[in-house]
Length: 193
Image (cartoon, rainbow, N blue to C red; front, side, top):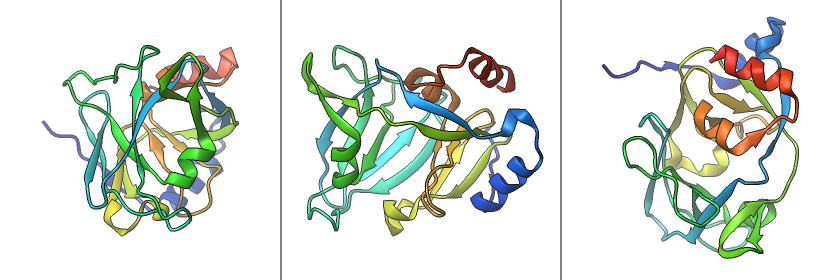
């Protein structure tokens, strides 16, 4: 049976969660793990990229566009192991997504141990874990063809982005690629799931 996602106005949804003062749904800080790696390639303008979660849910679908800041096509990115092999979900699908060229160059750097993969430039990020299966308008910077994003209950929304730019990460992908460096918060995240 296919999951049903509740379509939400993301800002209103998050404001309601945070205003509820339930500790489980308050913003917390996280960073990309030191072991988080991605492969990246320059996309072709108009190419459709679909991202899938670990359970096979289609998270979002977007066309590669030209970054107005650099004049270059978006980068197509996928999670990778330390040896550079692309991580596949339980259904054998790659979780690929697009990142504007200017954003990619500001947030990733070549891994000095393997020039075929990239590692994140460490920067703290703020997230809220969600208790519902939700669908919302994809970030505006992803362009008009991005449509919507689906995140299942237990997933996360990055909340330190401006209105219209917040995005989600599924639970499994978040736990594989991020750390809070706080054992109590890590346990709370697992308990909410």
